[in-house]
Length: 456
Ligand code: PHE
Image (cartoon, rainbow, N blue to C red; front, side, top):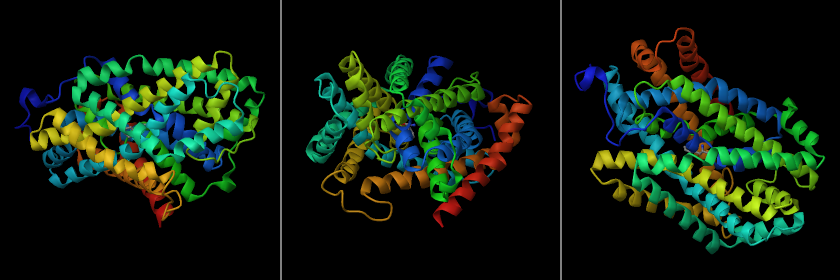
């Protein structure tokens, strides 16, 4: 079983290693913290009625998200290859089947589809850097900010240009490779973003509507909770933590042997959830203070935060910095979305990183036009979940990621033998047993239950 593992069972990765434990935590945090926290969480929570949704989301993060993340990292580090090859290899090694590689394959595809719309929204944040810096929002009314957003997304050429620039930036960093590319981009971004969120929070408190915002977010009204919104909460937990598609698995492949997977996962989950809650607390008071609706959809952040900045002293400065940071956060997440596909192509087809990046980047760029057009030309072309953008988002976040997570926990909890997993997690008694309980029973059963009830 260990015959293809030199050095007493420990492999090393083709793509290099993180320079330290901190570098790994930063990279996974960089992947987790992104548009999911600041753009998506508030609008999904708003669309699903607030309180009860937020509660279900938090439960999903803790009892499903955390064990899935640990499973992904441990699988990644044990296999030390791209997610497809890792699942295939471990499937054979653990006496099951090489067909487990398909789980990695689904992750590669999910990453490509998610990035196709992620890049479009990230392009909006780039444009908002320019709009902020040129004073578009200084003292603007809610109507003016809303109109600026509508006319912006209504112009498909403009948002296609922004999408193109963002994809270019992503391809550039991913092509440079793990160490040089990823680590540097993350180091200062998360703390800086946290700081600016606190500034926004301060402003939100000063509007006098803070209590209303808090009540909306934390007073659960279970009457309004449908299986559909439970699935949305589960999907959001997966999306925001970057799990279920092999991104964290790919990062785990570069993780040094001695790093604690449990500690790293806990740090990432805490930071990610904290930033999402902070974003909600900053945004909902603004929604109520300005007579907007929480269920406004994907434009919510772009209609609320510029308003707040527009009223603030030094607003042009803060607003510009905020959208720069949000673009950075999106950038470091986009890198994680591309990594599984790129690592797979490099290993499978013997291409250079640069070649793989350009190929994958082009494919994603083209697919992105489906979402570019969803906000203008094809806004009225709806089917199943809505526009093309809505469908790609629903399929990936609500179906593919939970399904990936389900299979990953089944693999880590049932297919891998106890010794393999305890070896990776460092057999820490109670902690290990809790993980195993969650990975074997709670997470898979929970995911299945929600998927079955919501989809069928
Ligand atoms: N977690 C990222 C965000 O919240 C999105 C993402 C999903 C990144 C999956 C990588 C993998 O923005």
